[in-house]
Image 1 (cartoon, rainbow, N blue to C red):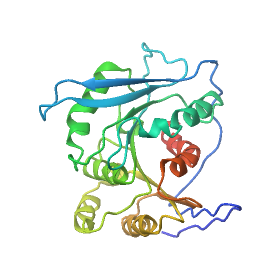
Image 2: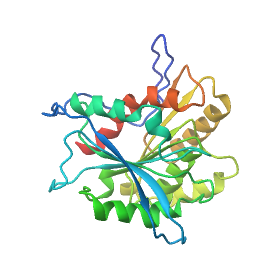
Image 3: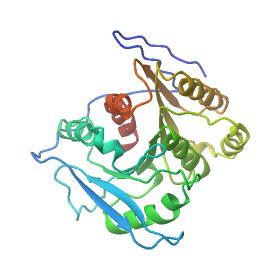
Image 4: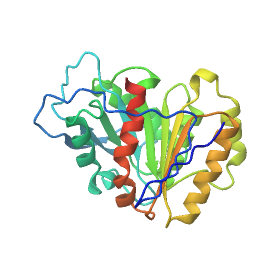
Length: 259
């Protein structure tokens, strides 16, 4: 695999990918409404306690849509909750991209952090089945993605790499290969079938040097296993504000799976 370097000013971007094609070929949505966000809770879970989450419903959401919607599971960082991404403005970015036809309508499920659930067992075993029972979700791994910030990015790759039949892509914002987990990640990647290799998106700021180093460590493993990825680097630090400023680029990348 050959990495591709692209420079833009005033920001500096590093894009490294097996393949990358993005355009604005989706039709603009014939809708004047904005999306809505709901705060919800699973009262009964396999761990014996309730679980809070938030669901973003896209503009002109149709609860009877036969084809169903793609879903992005969005995980916050340490000590954050389901509302962290929305408080940073991610719904506004998504609304605009959907209404302009840059991406198709989709659902976002914002989860709890994984501080006490490092392998995201509650997300995998409780939350996803509940969401798919309650909402018109498009079936198949192609239409299910996971992303997260900081420790949430670690959750994203753990879920996508350990359950490759369930997720088409993983995104890590201000995150990368957690130190000490190299052997486990190698084992997950070694076990991937060619048809199950997820695409990977990484975004780190230049003022977040440790996480940038961890992101680059992840790309070395992805290169080794011929897994398509994009690494986006710009002026920014370890904050939701910086990650959300790059979310539009991520959305266009993500929607490649939904054509």
